[in-house]
Image (cartoon, rainbow, N blue to C red; front, side):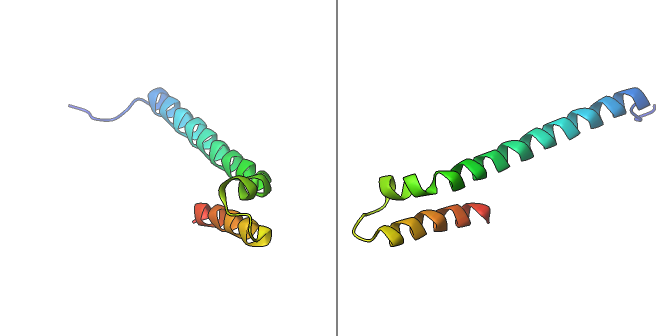
Length: 68
């Protein structure tokens, strides 16, 4: 019994993997770009406004933790 995948099927599987990987990477970087662009708005919405600079830094720190 042979467990080898035919070359055409292997090529199709590789193509699907590459497309899914590219789409996932694009979606992840789009998410980070959107969050970075909206960080100034998030700082006013989600963090205390006694010190606006600290709120902005907290928002950017949240973005930084997401990059890890």
